[in-house]
Length: 565
Ligand code: NAD
Image (cartoon, rainbow, N blue to C red; front, side):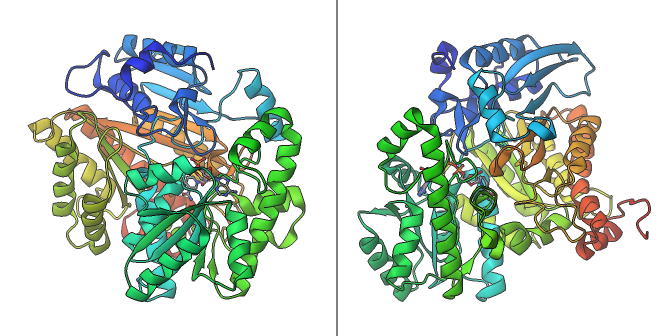
C-alpha cells in the first residue's frame, strides 16, 4: 500500500464548501466522495485504505490514491477517467453527457473467479477488493445501511409480530461498518438487541456514534439488562465482546432462546474478515500473518459451529435469517455442510417484494458539508410523499437518531411508481433536489447515489438473487446491463464490481452517481438515470415472473417486449 499519502493526511475527510479544486462539480463530487469514504469518522481503517466490509478499499495503494486525485483535478468536462481495481489507468476525451469516471473493481473471468486467485493478484498489487460502495466511492458510514436494516426488521415484525419488535430479543454478531447498524435498527423498531463483537474498539465506536446503547462486560450482564428491557417493553441494545459462535452456543446451553437470530460478521472472507473462536484478536491476527492456512481452517470450523447454532436456535423456536454475509455458502462450499441453507436469506424473506417495484436505497450527500442542506431535503421529501407513512416515520427516526458521519447524507428507499407526468419516485425527488440547488435553498450541489444492493443492479445467488422464481439466481447479464444503461442515461460515475458482501466469485453488481448542481443538464441526467436504474429492478423481476413486478410494469407503463411469452 505504501505510506499514507500526505494529501490524505491533510484532508482527513471530504473538502466542503462552495470553492472547488476541480474543473467542474462532477469531478469535484468524485474527489469529495473518495475522501469522504476515507474520512476517519466514516471508513473503518482508512490508514490502510479500508472503508468497510472486511477489506473493501477505496483505492489500490496510496500512490494510486494520489494519482486519482491528480487526474480528477485535471479532468475536463468532456473527458472520462477509467479506474481499474482502485488504480487510474486511462483518460479519454468523451463528451459532456458521458460519465466523468468509470470504475471496474475486483472482476475476474469465471474460471479464475475465486479468493485464491484474487489473493495472489492482490499480494502482487494487481487487483483490489472494492466491496460494494467502498471502491465506487459511495460509502457514507453506517448510516448508509441503516434504512435497509430498519426496513428488513420492520418487514420481519410485520410478518411475525404485529409490526413491532417491542418486547422481542434479537441476537446477532458483528459491530463493524455495516453490521454496526443492526442494534439501532432493532431499537428503532422498539426491540432489544444483543450483539457479539470480538473487537472492543468496534463496540466503543458504535456506542460513541449512538448506534449502540451500551457495552456489557459479560454475556450474563448483557442478558440481565436485555431481560429487564424486555419486561419493561423498552427499546435497548448492548454489545458484548465475544465470538458470535460462542455466544450462540452459550445461549443454547442455557436454554435462552431469542426471538430472532441473525449474523453480520464478515464471514464472506474467511481469511481477512471472520475471526475464529479460541483466539484473542491479537492472537488471531498473528496466526493470519504466520500461518494463513491454519487461520482459514480455524475460521471455517468456527463458521460451521456458528451456522449449526443458528439452525439449533431456529429448531428451538427462534426466527433465523442470514444477513447477507454468505456464512451459509461458506460452510456449504468449504465444510460440506449440506443443511447450511435450512434457514433463509434476508432478501427472499423480506426485501424482494420491494425490489419488484424498483424500490431500493436511494442516498444523497450534501457536498457543502452543511447539515442544514440535508434538513432542507428532508422537508422536501416530506412534502413530496406525505401519503407514504413508513417513509414519514423513517425521516422522523433518522432526524432524531442517526448521527451524520463525514458529509451529511440521508438514505430513503424509493421506487419506480410513476406519477401523472410519468416521473418515477426517484426522479421526482432528484429533480426537486436539483431545483433546491438551483434556487440556492441548498447551498452547494448534492450527489445522489445508492448501494449496489438494489433492485436491478446485482446478481448474487447467496443474497440479492437467492431463490429467484425462475432459477436465474446466477445470471449476471442484469448488473452489466444496468451499468451500461446508466452510462447511456448519463450517470456521472458508473461502476461494476465482483464480490461485494458475499465474496469473490459470488456476485456481480453495479452502481452510479448523479451530481445535482442545479443545471438543466443535471435535471436531464436525473430524469433519465432515475428512470432506467429502478426500471431495471422492475424488468428483471418481471422477467423472472414476479407478480408484483408485472403489476408495477403495468401500473407505471414500463415497456417489456415479449411480456406474455
Ligand atoms: P466489517 O468487517 O466492518 O465488520 C464486521 C465485524 O465482525 C468486525 O468488527 C469483526 O471484528 C466482527 N467479527 C468477525 N468475526 C467475528 C466473530 N466470529 N464473532 C464476533 N465478531 C466477529 O464488515 P461490515 O461492513 O460490518 O459487514 C459485515 C458483513 O455483512 C460482511 O460480510 C458484509 O459483506 C455483509 N454486508 C451485508 C449487508 C447487507 O445488506 N445485508 C450490507 C453490507 C455488508
